[in-house]
Length: 185
Image 1 (cartoon, rainbow, N blue to C red):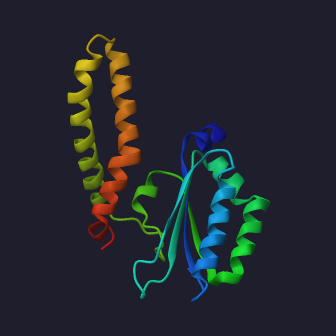
Image 2 (image 1 turned 45 degrees about the vertical axis):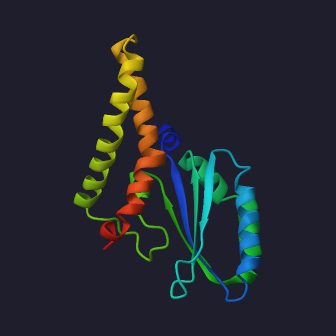
């Protein structure tokens, strides 16, 4: 049962990286190699590198998603990853701070924060409620005519699958970004 749960949940690695001053180009090349290597591992769902927001906050953020905790751990504990991390070391001011998130909290834990605190539950409630409202109503309006001839269970299953996918990959990421100052104030 535990293995099934690990397979069912997605997993995200948030890394806050600190390239040494003047070594950013070399660091970016090395992180690119690390990401390319991670793409060859099962369950890899994408990586993104966010450059520093300002001179006062000169760190990078690297976000890597996997389809399951098991696949994330396979990558994270791999010799290939360890080797690429060692290749990054000469270009770093200090080692990256890394968080591994494995559930719903991944939408509400800002990358690069020094703490693992998530926003208060009422703020998460408001953002999720807005996401449901903005996703479900348009989906019903759009899909109801197309699924009218289907059995209600099939139509409901199709509607819920498309809605959850839209919320996971579009609505919640956009709303988390739009409300980031309020969520993390």
